[in-house]
Length: 184
Image (cartoon, rainbow, N blue to C red; front, side, top):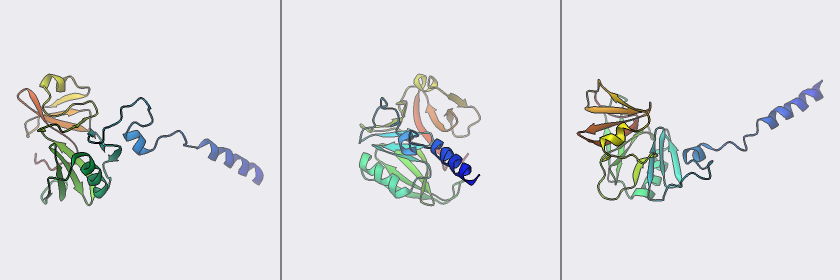
């Protein structure tokens, strides 16, 4: 009987092989799909659950030093660091990068990002290519677009359940995901 249990256990463990399952980093970078586009070294792709900077991808909860290092390699040195002591989510730290990208941290871990209107040739956008400055019609035509009618912050919208943004007049002015320090 004991021999049968050992043999069955071996088959169960062999059936659990995850050799074909991509790692979280591969999933974030779509490396499991050889046809997926590669992110340029000087580009940042913002995602609902994190971001990718060049060849490195990070989920929210990634360590601050790793995220800042990858963003610095892609965008250049941070433009500033600030602290929000009175955020609704608790104390937060913010690192601003060239291209109007601010990354939010709590207790040393990335918890969110905000992308404002870019000046110059910054290569920062959502996976779809959407970024501030896009016309209203492009934003409203994006999959998952839904206006947030009761927002106290302006003309706010959601893209699916995890990305949000703001429109002013006929253009996109800001995108965000994760934990924010907005006062509603």
